[in-house]
Image: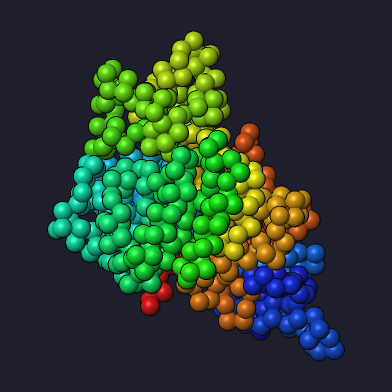
Length: 536
């Protein structure tokens, strides 16, 4: 007898085709049989050691989070209900050009400091790896959900060139090519960049193109957080399209939004740009989260010249009154490149988390509101936080537009990604709510997508981008990474006031045929493993 039969499920199989009613049989971590209702009439129904009555529930492939920041959370938190409870069965890590492999001791210490606001400093993690392969091996010891990894271009540049704003020498470029190739050989699925974050932002297009040629040779893809989501956003998107066309490399646009006042209502222009490229034969996908605010660190808003040299140099510049005055001018008047070329509006910058508990009183308020309470300028408050929290402050940036969010999620190249930062007392609710919000708010309540369309966006499309031959569809022979949800009640629990509340209407989640969520509760199963690049 097989392990499990899921009885009388409404199967939305990830293809985008209409749903059907079926019994789905699982054995050895794979789907071994799908018996549709019509085929079962008058026949003996499949039997298994265990039966699950799925009456009233949709059975779909597990959701793939194409943009996750769980690089340390998966190691420190075996529960990881933030993602497991949403029905996420695979996350893509190494995002925005900064993560923890490949590194040496020096670079690891610098990266840990630079992205404390994303992942914490990691005092509770044993950093017993240095290469990409060693990190993936660490994941293979057992994690809550599966994980794939992108080689982070900024980390590679920090390792080879350092944190200075200069072009790489020919020898340094060769070394970076070799590191990217090594990471892909060890199982990474592609390359990421954070082109508004140091040191990745110091790379010119020619350098990025050469790294993308390496990625293309291994069948991977390039995932840039490009140079602007504000002023010049369309030019920044076009830059990535042109760069990857030159390199012959597939492109996946990270959190493909059109933010800030300058881009209100301009999503159709972005989509037209992408459609022209797709119609000309380009291989392009993108991901978005279904919310309007963004999330990053307060330090990320600083101009690139102030960030040169790494975290300690930033703090030294902030300590100098003259240099700090220049930083303020760039932020408030010129429009810092770290703030996407748009002068910062402090009333849109909400503190979501701090590294130093003594600063907890700032959390949940905008910088502008805290400044009023303290009787000081917003810059004085921001400066205080940057220095006292040693760049560890996380923020929400309320600069998005709902019409842009809806337009982009309808696009033929769209996939889902949470961009979920799990740090801070009040993180962005997208970390806990992205996937049920798609299904509940945008499918059931608004009808922006049909259920079948939405499930395809969250399953088969990302699986195709990742070149996974046996995930993303409910098919015989495919891995039993599955989610069962109630289409009438599925909804995020997370809100901006209660961002860690778990979703409703997702009673069961399976990875490798094992229940990680059962009857709405997290089990102790650690079925997740590293998902390595499929060889070309």
